[in-house]
Length: 125
Image (cartoon, rainbow, N blue to C red; front, side):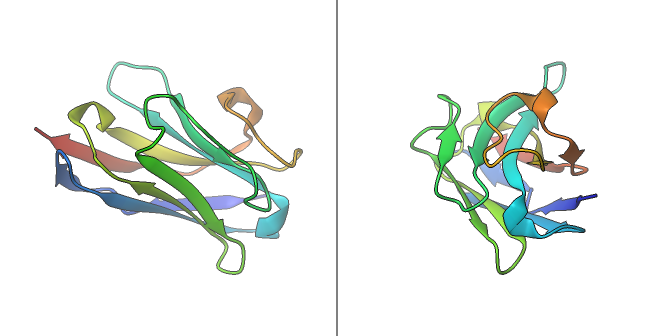
């Protein structure tokens, strides 16, 4: 079992920055592949970024490439999403996800077996 708790979401103006955190417990963090997904009202939950167990492999959705950075601190059992140059279209609930059966989880949400409760990010224009 893996428990995930997101934090850091808030209201921010366009062009601003936020850093989301995802605290994990219940399993050795370095044995878990992680990712961020987001869901806007009326839309499907979609991939944002993924990171391998060691942090050596990362992947981003085209819409956030160059603006967002995913990272993890295995000593602190925490994953991060640094969000810069935020746009109103980034407004969504952001979820962290964990996958325990693979070194790297990828961008398919059905392959992740643990999810946090989400944190709201709202970007005003």
